[in-house]
Image 1: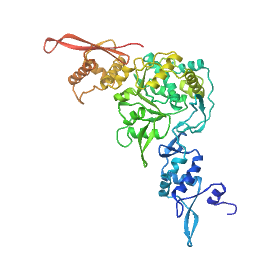
Image 2: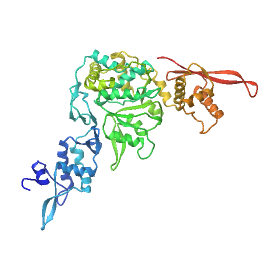
Image 3: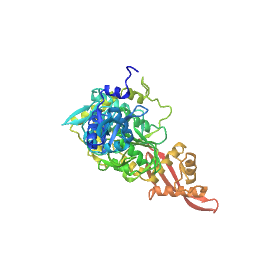
Image 4: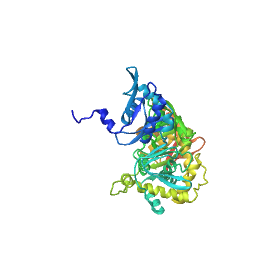
Length: 521
């Protein structure tokens, strides 16, 4: 039909360059160099570790990095090039249009040209990043920045300058509706707003702990607090839910999250033991961990771009992971509590609506710390001394809050001790049953646990009441050791021995009773 262009004619007129694929007289290296030289200019293809990745958009409209598989690479070459290959025709070599085979795509991806010509990438962020260059603070705006191993800022936005006192007031307002267990928990919640800015722009070259959000009941706001942290940076976390070992295991999910280069990775609503070697190595190690990638084998992926989040009501951790954690505890507010509202909705909707302003509040605090000479506190009660000491100085000196680590070491001990974690669940069950302050026998505590779905730790399935009572008494005795009182997560538990008459044997015997009470912050 006159005036209608064929597909190849249309693409030629569109100005697509020619790419001669490896064929007679055309080596892989030359084809790869020409391909990756142009693909590098698109700022859509990058190298992460030794892996070629592509900036892709999911169905929700969020952009992430995914490994570029050979099958996909074939079609990408067709998008950016007119593909030709040398073919013998009448005893002569001529260039003819062609398609890229999977083997050819694999060969091009495996050349060193991708590593040398494609830009590297460490972090994919939605919002501007604050960093330091030659002692001066700089804001990295939308686009690719060849600093700190490569940072890509996806969205455009001008971060306003916020006066320091206004910034302090605005950030403190974000935590006013949470019922924190202690003043130290409030300080740790505030520090969580600031840590990502220090992390992303490498204002601190050190390890950061995982932000663990705990609550006494579900729907208390632990995940909501993490959403507020992410909202300040215009992000949604890469969410990982608990899975069993094997295909789709926790470590495989963490590997996929790390490859994406997204800044927040959230382990959501974990129960039971959190045990991941990759996670522990990512939190404190050499800055890279081995990640198994489907169809690609294993790659060493960087970890210093991530802020890790974990929410739980009853998580148990290894000792190493507990030492790599910063734990913030909250209580559930009563339904009658008057939560603050805004024209745009609740506090989360308000932050999302004013995201760049709140990011400006964070940057204002960072500027104050940097202008003061980047000081640190002298409190060394955490293994991650540099990051914690910096945040500790900021929350105390700038926000005038309590020390960051008050009461924290005890929580690390508790969360790494399964028996103490169970004892906390028992105390919460007694609170829900309105039995705090009452002296209770082991059998009564068993009934309370049954009513509030707390497992009797160590009891065999199908055990009768007598056996369950004995197991309860044994667990409680082990929790106390030689003491007659212990404290755990805002609860005080007392033990007392009493003489009482045994109705069956008609003689006196000694029994232990227990009293759970709550102490205020």
